[in-house]
Image (cartoon, rainbow, N blue to C red; front, side, top):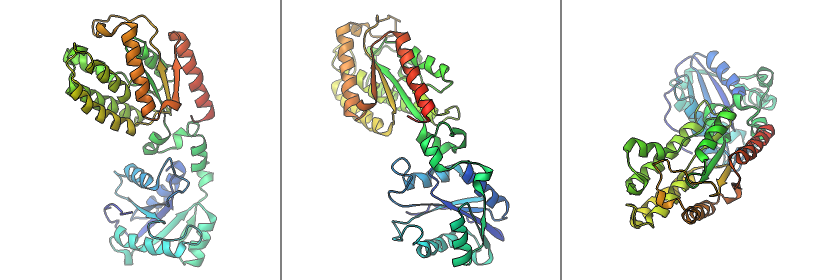
Length: 373
């Protein structure tokens, strides 16, 4: 894997910390911060790994390298590099030390402005690493009792991320967030349900981007064209992504809508001659919607059946308020979810608001108790 450009470190001494960082957590930061503060040149961080290591499939090596760089993007005293053992053809630990250190020397010459005049000190939390570096390879290594400082490990986080949420660095939180989608056709109460769930669990929740867009533009549903639906897709995706990545996310996120829902409306309305959206425009919208859906990760999907009274709020397209039209849209949405490969995450809800609310609350409480979905 190619290493991105890093500004060379300057100083008489630099610290070195390496690990798989699956994920990067506060325990790792104990090592990195100590290495950075005890050496005037700062710290080199090496993101290690190989294909199929303990970070996969949730956190492939390339993703971990990217997220660690993101975390230290504003810190000139931390330079982040990577070593993928498969790519350079070395054996896994403990047999690959010689090849690994040879690769590190190449990195070191790039990472430090004056490598021959700069001392290096390794900071490790593993006694075996400490003995190998100090003994076999004549390096200077400091053994840090990391668990005494912060009793956490990457394994503990992977097994129960919600319990240890405060120990996970923010770029990696998006990996462990339990993302819950509330979806259905119009006038089923999903917006109120989503907001109430977010408030109940003190969790971030999104609104339906299309509704706000239409109000701001003062346009009706039947006037929407391909450009509008493209804006819905991008706007909803960015809104959901922003909330998943926000500091307010403590492990649970609720979404009011997504690309599969937007695709449902576009397909249904493109078939109606009263609507401005053409079938040709829908085909383009569908391609973009499917690509966005591939980028989304939903852990739970609650699908609301058409069953309530259709409310005329003077914004909805009342020509589609009949049960036949609502069921047609519902079937389109079901097909969208199935074709995306997400049907195994679906719970179909056909009760009233209160029963639906209690069902989801019970499920989410179970997720929180277990520490993960």
